Image (tube, one colour):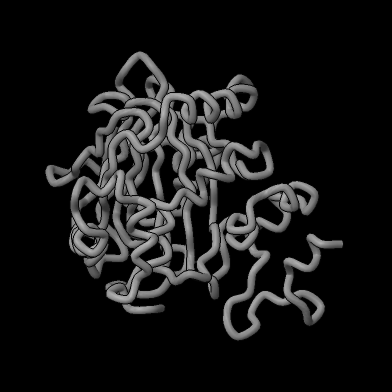
Length: 291
């Protein structure tokens, strides 16, 4: 990974609209210190409308979560790049990629891309950190960057994501109320809220806003005590030498991959991590899209 001081100035210029007069390096220092950052109103109303339209047919099916982690009163829609081209621009948004590439390297991959819709009555999710599946002891550098795009307003009552600021630096692999194997068992439900904490911070933000979090940050989906559902889309990134959560080669068929932007193609695996990790039959995988 190149030193941050050597970043291309063109990258900072392309996202200057959202930096609020601060330098990219300044934002990255805050990201390193707190483990998360928020940019408000990044997406336009037209972009939000297009995303809602693309998700509508899947949300209408109202398929709810299979366990406590997914949420018994939540809809999760996976493999978004295989469902609509509208998500192409979202996973390659320059603001999100600026921080993903700074933390994970320019050869990073898309690890997952899903929508999460919390219905009224949904309970708080177990605490977790998004790169825990790598099972490397903490404290350590993050092996992931998660982005949370607010498609609806996220409020104090409708299930805004809760975080523990600075927890990306904690050595703890487990905290009270953290996810465990039982939370993935069908029909298993927790009693009350064993993860309630005084130091939890609800990330409220208007629709169109973006939260970026390090993969080691402890967080959870909040309880929805409102009368309306709340929707987010969360593309997540990992280093190019690790295995993504979702198998993008199967989630996004080649005929669809051919229609995506070159950067998105790279993010879903049509790329090489130096010197030659990711080749197919001894050749660059993007050649498969040319046949």
